[in-house]
Image 1 (cartoon, rainbow, N blue to C red):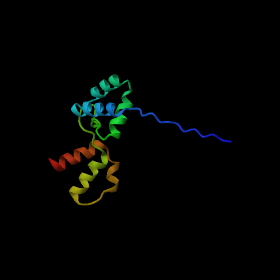
Image 2: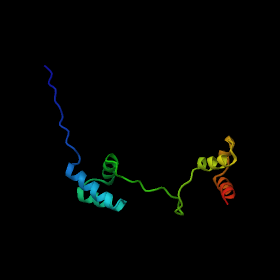
Image 3: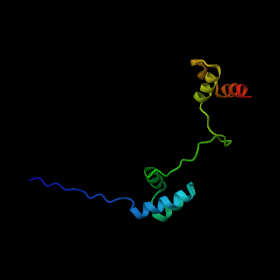
Length: 109
């Protein structure tokens, strides 16, 4: 005779904890807030972020270069150039990013 056992799943966060996380994070959506929640709730930062993502309230920090400028992909630059000239240029994506940026600046300038 085989006996089956069912595991009872214990939630990682109580509804009260989730409500506290959402309220605290939406008031000040920063990584410092995540660190404070991590300390307050005894969970690691990645767990807090994952829960906030699942709840639909986490706002990822925008990616920036070392100089603080927003990151622009080469494909976006090529798209701007192609739209300006009204044609496709498949091999243009092989140009250096700095050359593409200079071309976009010349078009827009």
